Image 1: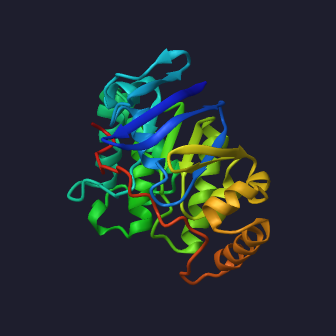
Image 2 (image 1 turned 90 degrees about the horizontal axis):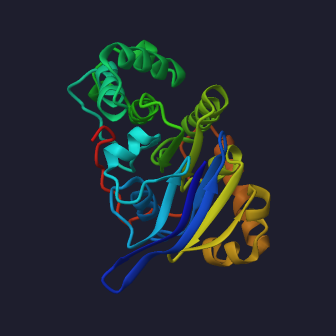
Length: 277
């Protein structure tokens, strides 16, 4: 369904993404991890038209998307969230999500209203629909952004560190919601996350970037046991990887805010551009 081939993006003498390719099948959840600055967000920007790649191809259902503007990419069926939460704070939750359906998805007003109601219900925000976004805690505001992207009726949903800043309990609930979106809507998900324990729980496959290069791809179990991933990402061999994963699992089981296994985020080009542009 989604085919990414040979994506390269350079900035001066820095190659932020180097010949990266992968495919995503319908209904699949694919995680993306890697150290800080590995090129994860730059890859999302290139795929969604926010920052065009120097070379490579992005095809959705066989349609080439490289060169298309972000709004055209969205209407083709590829929606995303951004690292920074950028809701329309003086608007209600319903109005935020309606903007995504109307302008991002291109629905007429009646269809946009239906898509908004369905998205709010799916992310458990129907009861907050008439509250202002600014009145919500961070976990709920992230769900507003998720609903706004979902209301565009995507085939593929790209999530950029949507679990960042949340407690373990909130991350667990969000992971359940992401899996439910896949199960009920058949939407494929590509999910960058620095909370690796949550991602390993929810993903079917995991891609690992390091210095802009795709160094590994496989199931969560395979990635945990991969020597190269352990060296590049966790700073040690498989024993260290297993130890870190076990510690993250114990942390996530707690109801108190704590630190799960992380990659420290990705400072490689997140823009905070609104989803409905």
